[in-house]
Amino acid sequence: MGDKNIKLFENKRVRTVWNEEKQDWIFSIVDICAILTDQPTQRGASNYWAKLKERLNAEGANELLTNCQQLKMLAEDGKMRLTDVADTKQVLRLVQSIPSPKAEPIKMWLAAVGKDRIEETIDPELTIDRALATYLRKGYSREWINQRLQAIQVRKELTDEWDDRGVKGGEYAILTDEITKAWAGLTTRQYKVFKGLKKENLRDNLSMLELTLNQLAEVTTTEISREEKPDTFEKNKDVAKRGGSVAGVARQAVETQIGKPVITSKKAVDFSQLLADVIEYKIAKDNKDNDKE
Image (cartoon, rainbow, N blue to C red):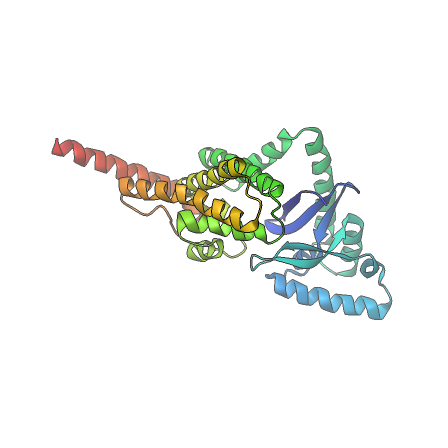
C-alpha cells in the first residue's frame, strides 16, 4: 500500500501507512483511541475500541465500522498483527464519537500530517529538516543527530534490499533481531528491557558508539545481501547473522581499547555524559601510558 511510518502526536506514537493510490494516510484506530482516552498501552486502547464498536453498532451509527479495514502493523510485542485502521475522514468521525480534550488538537494534527506529506513529496529534504528540528527540540547533540540521520538512511537501504529479496511482514523483525543478537548479544526486546524502555524507540536511546556499531552491522548486511542475493528467508537470516557478526567483532575491539562495555543501560538523556566519560577515560589512559614511557 505504500511506505510505513510512525507519526508523533505530543510524543505519542501513531502507526500509519501512506496509501499511494488514494494519496491519504491510513491510521491505527487503536493508537488514535489511546491518545483520545489517554490509555497508556495498546491493550487498554484495544479494549476501549472494542467496547466503542459495540456501542456504535447498538446505536446504528456504523458508518465508520462499515468501511473499517485491517492491516498488519507492528504491535507492542514486536510482531506484525492485524489492527483496525482508518483514513483521515474516518478518524475525524472517530474523534466525534469520543469525548476528549484532545479532540481539537488531534484535528489540527491530522491536517498538519497531510500538509507535511505534500510538502515532503515536493521537496524530500524537508523530511530531514523536520527530523533534525525534532531531535534538537528533544535535547540531542548535533553530533548524535547526524549519526542518527545517517543510521536512518542505512536502515532504509537495508529494508529496500530485503524488499528486493522477498522479505515480508514479521520477517523484518526476525532479521533485525538476528543482526542485533550477532553484534550486541541481545534481541531487540532484550535490549529495550536492559535500557528500561517501554514504548520508546530503541535507536533513539542508543549512544554514539551503539548507533555506529548497529549502523556497521546493517550496512554490512546490505552489502553481503547485494552480492549474494539470498532467495530464501533462511538464507537472509544467515546473511543477517554474518553482517551483525562483523560489528560484533568491532564491538569487542572497541571494548578492549576503552576498557568498558559498549552496551550500556544509559538512555538518551545520558548521552552527553557518556561522551564525557569516554573522553575522560581516554585522557586518563593516555596519561598513564605516557607515564610508563
